[in-house]
Length: 260
Ligand SMILES: *[C@@H]1O[C@H](CO)[C@@H](O)[C@H](O)[C@H]1NC(C)=O
Ligand SMILES: *[C@@H]1O[C@H](CO)[C@@H](O)[C@H](O)[C@H]1NC(C)=O
Ligand SMILES: [Mg+2]
Image 1: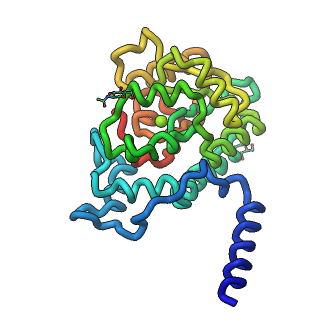
Image 2: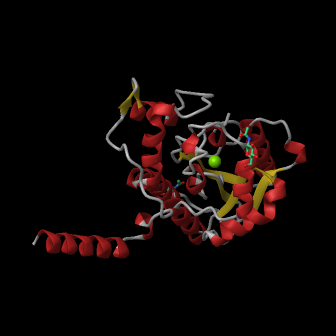
Image 3: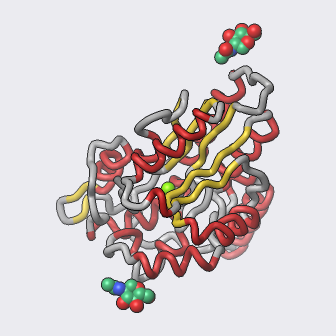
């Protein structure tokens, strides 16, 4: 009896998940890790920490607190992260739908790549990365980027493509080194991002600039070319602060790392 009830519940769950909208589909197939209810670990309230990170009250932090690794892992791989991203995407779409396009093709949205259009969760879930609780290793991360297999964040992809159908142009602006231009373009395309006005990566002329300075510089170039930045979507505050940040900015969550 118990077994058949379980089977029925299981079948309902599978059917519900299959029928659900794109937003509910998994970013990837990793299982949420243990430790969901354990927010207060070794004196650190991980939810408070995450909130402080998202609101930019905590800055220049280097690592996820060790005791919050499984909390952050659960958040990133579970439903909450996807729901949080969907709220951001819905707000952006609501705003976009009220804008009057000028029709000259110069109304643009700026999108970041990592943890915005594409998710690096499969990489961050690795045991030698631990969701940002272990130090960043550029060599290792670049190997992952070179694979070109990062999945889309479904809510952001939905927003992105909807903006295109509304008549906006999207510019992708990332701190990725320009030597990854081809693999990043292929990865974005494979993940369901089919068109962009520009795909701007960090070149030699941008060397040594902070993220805020680099992104400000490149956005200012766009504005001087006659573009109007009506929206800007990123996971880091450094995507959304500085010159010509855009008429409105939208921050998607990222409790795994901080880029100044
Ligand atoms: C867009 O145009 C409509 C109709 O002219 C106007 O009511 C509305 O305020 C405009 N919206 C913006 C954001 O300018
Ligand atoms: C960084 O990753 C590379 C490639 O996996 C590895 O060879 C290297 O030892 C790592 N560096 C550190 C400091 O862990
Ligand atoms: Mg990013």
